[in-house]
Length: 163
Image (cartoon, rainbow, N blue to C red; front, top):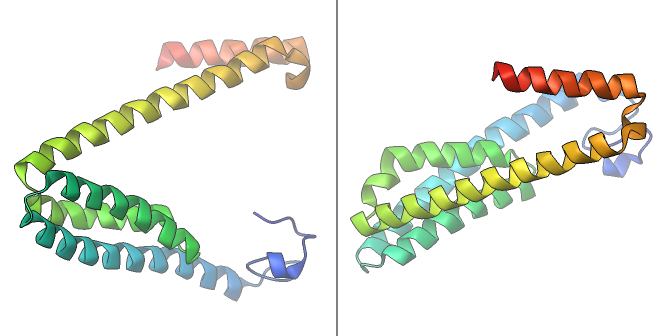
């Protein structure tokens, strides 16, 4: 996001108040651009995996999948499209067409690597949340008064019990 008083060359929709046309155009650029990038990446990955399977290299197949996912995200973001949407469309393409092309060894390796990455991301998120919570508890001046801190702590405990 860019501040309203930033120079026009830094804004995606120049002017103090962006026009409706610019906002709609930007929406379609993000939405449709992400879908197109995901579909193109899915088609490229389909052909790449199909050719790699003949080489009987499950490591190569797994590398293609990982490079494809991260490459799709960064390509879409570079083109100022939605990287998340591009990866979602790539995932749908992978579920529909590419997953069946992977060898059984690549299926196993893919499951193991993705499970490990998911586990690590989960731990990192909770570690970061814990560090932020400790900062708020130890430095009540940043949270306002002690009453506000007590309300926040009580709300967190109630939320923990509900979940």
